[in-house]
Structures are given as structure tokens and as C-alpha cells.
Length: 413
Image (cartoon, rainbow, N blue to C red; front, side, top):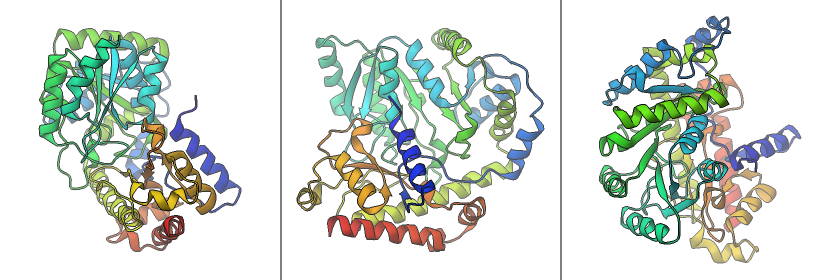
């Protein structure tokens, strides 16, 4: 089945190419331009056309190890594996780790789909009321016991901190409780930290590596913090010790048969970025500010329209719930998240992704909203948005907010 996020992006792009005016809030592309020096490094490496080690070059792995170490997670290059995107690494981990997948719900669309591809059952656990990305600690233990009585074999817990689809950051105390339950049940933890550089206030997000270091694998990449999604650069860190070493060998086995190695020019770009040069750190800091400012502005529009929505704290996502205006929507024959998303697109030219794509209940009037494609249609506009002290006042951003305000007013007015 086609990934829901990729499918909506392709559908909206086709509408725009046909001349329709569509506000694209359906796809989590970071929406920023490539810094000049990063592009130059890639160009300079274009002649590197040979195959390399499956794990990645020594240069790239040492850069990634230093990157983790500077973020209070001491790491050796021998603990790092590169791949064409973190999505490939997530799939490899689900293929290599034993047991069924324990998944907070709602969760990014590809986790459950990948589990199905490798024959794993999915044990869903609701997220806490105030944040997403981790299961509710109070419900997790019961869900694991119940799953085993129903024939499942829970073995892998997947956490996303910061979170997609809610744009929130789990509290450290909640994460500690979750890891304690995972430890009691012998679960391995995959910690998807692709948004960790994009907390809006710059405060480091908590990581499961602080609470279950010996069985937590971290995945990350450059698609979100550096907006290099099309370059497909992902990397993972396995724990120190025999468990991590065995897992790395298994991941190498998967990678050797599936992707061989990350493209060598991309490894050169990764090595440059992960060394944290001043241009890169300044670019990411500006991105944090832009993502937060625009996400808060969009959040205000949904709240004004009557939806309830967690306040965004990282990345560029919102997860509004239209339950308070269910009666108004029902009069328009809108009773599901899919119908809500369809009405917004077909009637009002606003593309969002229904919550059910993220494992939410069909009757839930919820949607994932991505705000990062509001920064401009051209590289010049995106650079201006990135450098602006007041990006929501830029004409193209303001026009988008006006479009959204009108659409929501018409929908629930």
C-alpha cells in the first residue's frame, strides 16, 4: 500500500500542477533551502562513485560519533551505521529485532506498515493526554500483559521524541516510567530522534538512552533538521556492549542485501554537517525559530475555529481534534477523520492527513497538519522566511494563514 504521507503529497502536487490553489498541510517536508556550503560539499564529492562499507565511511561514522558525543551520548564510530534515510534503518531494525512491535498511538504512518511487511503484530497503546511519541506509562504494562494473553510476543518498543504527528515532546519523567516498564518486560527500544534538533526553544529533548542505555537504538538523519529529505541520509547508533554489537552485525546483513551502502557523496555531506560547523548550527537554530513561529500561528487558527490541539513544541506538526464542533460537522455529513480531511481538500483547498492514517480511530475527527510548506514556493522566499524576524507577516505566509482561516471558518461556521 502506498504510504499515506507520500500519497497525499503526490495528490496535492498534481492538483497544484493542474492550476488549483491548494494549501499544502499534508506532508512533513522541512521546506527549507540548502545552505551554500553544504551544497558545495556535495558537489565536490560527486566523483566518489565507488562502493564503500555497508556501515558507512570512517569519516562519516567518526563525524556521527562526535555529533552524538557532543549531545551527551558518548559514542564510538564502531557503534554507527549509515543508510539511505532513517526509514531504511527503521525497517532494518524491525527486521532484525525479535518480537512484535509495541507502538504508541497515534504514530507516524510507516511504523505499523513496516512491521506488517516483516510479519510483526502491532500492540497499540494510547499516548498520554498532553504529548505524543511515547505510550501512556499507566497503560503500557497492562497492554503488554494483555497482548501476551492474546498470543502476541511483544519485543520492540518504538518511541518518537519529539513526536510526529503531534509536534510535542514527552516529559522526561514519563519517558523514564516507560523505559522502566520496557526493562521489566525485556523489550528493545527504538528511539526515533529525527526531530531532536528541532525543539522550538532549543532545550534538548529527553532520550530513552538515559534510562535504558543497554537496549536502546537511536535513529536519526538530516531530512528534518537540515531539510535534506531528498538526499536520503540516515544514521543509527547501537548501544555499547555485546547486545549492540550483535545487532549491528544483523543490521549490516540487512543493509548488505537491501541498500549496499549510502551513496558516497551523501556520506561526504553528512560528515560535514555532523561536524557541527558554525554555518550548520546557525542554520538549524534559525530553522527552529521559523518552525516554532509558523506552527504556533497555525495552531492559533485551529483553536480559534473550535478545535482542541496540543501546543506545538518541536518540529512542524499539529494534531487538531474537532470533537468540540462534531455537531456542526455532522450536519455536513462529516463524522470521520477521513471525511474531515476530504471536506477540507475538496471544498476548501486545504490538504491535511486524516488521523486514521496514523492509527487513530476512524470516528475521531482528528488530522495531522504539517506547517513546513508554508515558507514559500521558491528558494528565495524560503531564505527570506528563514531570515525574517516576523515570518508570519511575509505576504505569502500571511496569505496562507488567511486561506486557512477562511477555510476553517467556512467549515465550522
